[in-house]
Every structure is written in C-alpha cells, then in structure tokens.
Amino acid sequence: MSVNFAILGAGRIGRVHASAVASVPGAHLVAIADPMHAAAEAIKEAYGCDIRTIDEILASTDVDAVVICTPTDTHADLIERFCEARKAVFCEKPVDLSLSRVANCLKVVEATKGTLMVGFNRRFDPDFMAVKAAIDAGRVGKVEMVTITSRDPGAPPSDYITRSGGMFRDMTIHDFDMARWLLGEEVESVFASASVLVDPVIGELGDFDSANVILRTASGSQAIITNTRRAAYGYDQRIEVLGATGMVSAENHGENRIQLADKDGFHSAPLLNFFMSRYTAAYANEINAFVASVTTGDATPTTGHDGLMALALAEAALKSVAEGRLVKVSEVL
Image (cartoon, rainbow, N blue to C red; front, side, top):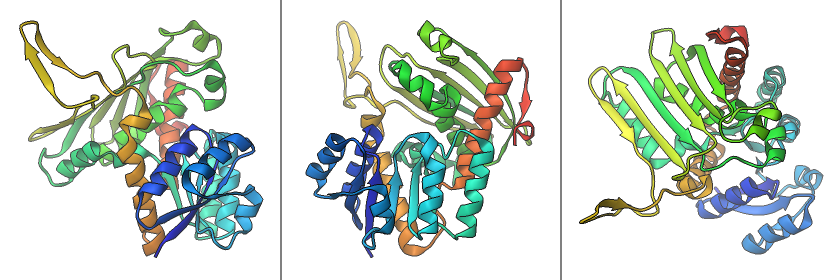
C-alpha cells in the first residue's frame, strides 16, 4: 500500500519533509499548502505535486496523511481537524506550547481513534538507533547515566526566538525526548541552569542561549544535557550512555570520516554545520516509520504522549531556572 501525503507549510522544515517523503518507498507527495506562493511553487516544481489550500487538502480524497510544518500555534488545531477527517497526522514538535492545550488535543486524537506521530527525528538517526539497540540488547547493563551534548553552530534570528517558545521548548525538547528514550523510564525531577552568553538580545527577549540540565528518574538514573546556541567548530551532536556493565556512545559527524596525519599532527574534516545535513537519514527514517504505522495500523513510534512529556520536562526546566531549585515533574503536569 502506498501512502499519499500532503505537506502543510513549505518553509525550511517543510522542504526537509518533502525531500524525506520523496525518498521513502511507499510514500507519494500529492499536495503542498502554504500561503507564500513562491515557497509552495518551489516544492511543486521539485516534486511534481499540486498546490492546494489546507481546506482543500482536508476535503481531498486522494490524501491519506499530512505532515504539519506550520507555525507552532496552529499545530493542535490542525491535528484535531485532520484526525476528525480520518487522515493520519505527522506533526513537527511541539504539539503546542501549552501543556493543557496538548492534553486536550490528545483527547481529540483518542476520541477519533486518530493516528498521530510527533516529529522527534533524533530517535531515527542511525547512530542513535544503534546506541538504543545496544541498550535494549543488554550490552551495557542497566542504564545509570546518560550524557547528551547538543550545541548549535549559531543562534537563530531574533524573530525566531520570540515565536519558537524559547530554548527549552524548542531546542532542548529534542534532548528531553532522547533522554526519556535512552533512560527507558520516566523522569521524576529536573534541575536546570541557564545563562545568556552568546547574544544579549536573546536575554532581552526573555530567553537563554546556554543551558545545562540534570534529569533524575525514580530509580536514581540520571541524564545530563548540555546545550548552547554557539559552537564555533560546527553542529555538535554527541551521546554517551553509561550502564552497569559497559558504555556505548555516538560521536559527531564530519564532512567526511577520514583522518589525515602529518608532521603537524592529526587532522579531520570539519563537522557538519546544520541539522538538515546532519539528520538527513533521520528525517527519511522517521517518515518511513510513519508510513509503516499508517499501512499496518500499528502504534506510531513517537506519540502524542511523548510530545506531552518532553514539553513537561521543558516546563519543569523553566521553573527550575526561575526558582533556582530542583523541580518535580509532577509540579507542572
């Protein structure tokens, strides 16, 4: 069975998903919707799909699934509308910036028996999947400590800062999801420290650009997350998992994997410098997993509940920074 897709939103992440859909066997892009005609036209020209309005896609009989890449404040409404129309939904994170709005949206998904997958693409990175497979196979024993390094090469524009929900809800939310996934149990408490070290304008807008977070589960396992909006050497994405009997890690990706040695020492290629190049395979893998869920009826591998819990950790981190204390996740849910 092939799955016919429409993409809502032709911006940067919409282009990423259009490429991913085109690369996945059994997926076919039939329509794009975006009020910016030039952006929609570029995807139409690249992939041979139609340009339609969201209302037209909602009524289309040749669309089985949608990928929501619109602004965050539209996500929950669109999820509800398309679930009620009996179309499968893949939505970029977050579902919403409000925990109560996410919870109400998930009630609609459940009531309509809708299919919803939330886009936490890093779970589908081949290296990170191999880390998880090693954990699940018992290769490192019980997980005791997870260390996640996630550093962007540069800060986004100020207008993005104001609409994204801030560092914890937009950037660290990926790491919160990875931590839950790798720890294998829910996080009980959060302690976060955050600063403005990269750009004072970010602070003036009420956000942070540098943060460290410690997560702790009921069993005592911990995850440490380190984030910054500035890594002068490239897009820094590393994971280490320490277990009772061993350790497994995933290192950065460079422009190539060679190492050259000469009289001046050892030299390697620069790191990949943007998420779209670093996670190309991950985006294709997550769409492939979504197609499998749609065709088989199995549960999606990243769910609305995952989106809710990652946002809850972000809210707990914000509360921890504001109040200078450890915050129980139960305080924000």
